[in-house]
Length: 302
View 1: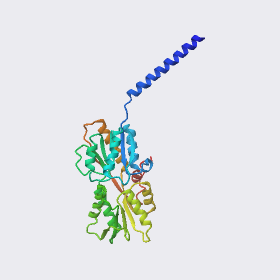
View 2: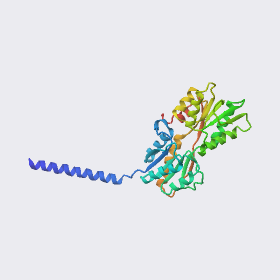
View 3: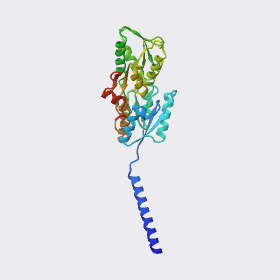
View 4: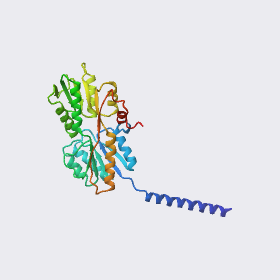
């Protein structure tokens, strides 16, 4: 009886040892997933942001791990670079970042690219990338031109408008502002700095569009609101009629392409990185429910 028990114990121990060896061998043969750091000024809510949803889908397809780092709204470009350097020191093989300022972004990306794959989000650098770092952005000047033409149609008799935000620290905002002014050249529409007493408010980015809609709602004589956005709060404002027209950038594609571009660089270090463009669409309340626009506005809904 004792012999049977001893033999059973030996068998169990041998089986356990064999399983342990199999697990160790599996761990050794499984490739370690690359880690990509994402530096963003936004609140990271995947269900409410097409950009992050696109990133998560690409991470799943590319088998990489994403680590999100929220950059404080008051951060300088130097402080943003320090955050990126810390992520690289902690093991990130690539960095995706929304530059807080376009001026100096090329130098920052060039320096970071010596240690990791770098992709700028929503912005082009202020210097030639020369294949050392990538970017994914929209054609921001063209977006401004489309907005300007739409404003001219909404105000056929002219009127005063204000553009938000006032700062042009980021090249995307400056390019949209330039496009609007060019499209309105020769019209009776006047651009002013103050938001009081205007016929129309323009939000040049998502948060500015939200602020414009809130500011308009507080006015006794409510101005029209147009701009660039894609958050759920601005989509609902468009549906309510608080926003007349909104240009929606395909940020799902932006997020997906950024992760995919970084992964390609990690897989082939000699590969030159690309400057990629994503599309955009002007959406109005009466066109937002088309099948194409629904897919753009709600990319997570299948």
